[in-house]
Length: 116
Ligand code: FES
Figure 1 (cartoon, protein in one colour):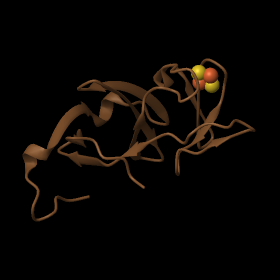
Figure 2 (cartoon, rainbow, N blue to C red; figure 1 turned 180 degrees about the vertical axis):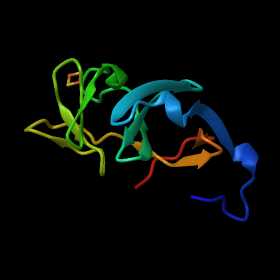
Figure 3 (cartoon, protein in one colour; figure 1 turned 120 degrees about the vertical axis):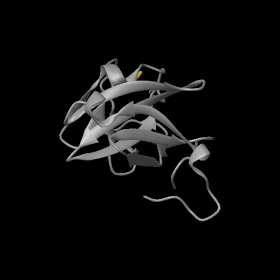
């Protein structure tokens, strides 16, 4: 993803490097007051809210199960495609955020804007 014409590099902040996120794994980072979950799945870095919408467990302490993020506390699972929860839970989907990769760095847009 590139920058739009009316954006500048100052709109993006480095939060980690690509090697910081295990392949097919999870890494928690902090971005201002936000806890963010970085996921490296099939060589694509994705960013989601880092706290479970159920009881705010830290999803970075969970694991990937196939193409789902599994919460460490009560094992709810969230789709990597759209953050939706499966398995009979009535939870809000995880917010997903735009990510940019530059020179091996992972950048998030500041301020965060959730993808639709
Ligand atoms: S805190 Fe995540 S499923 Fe309960």
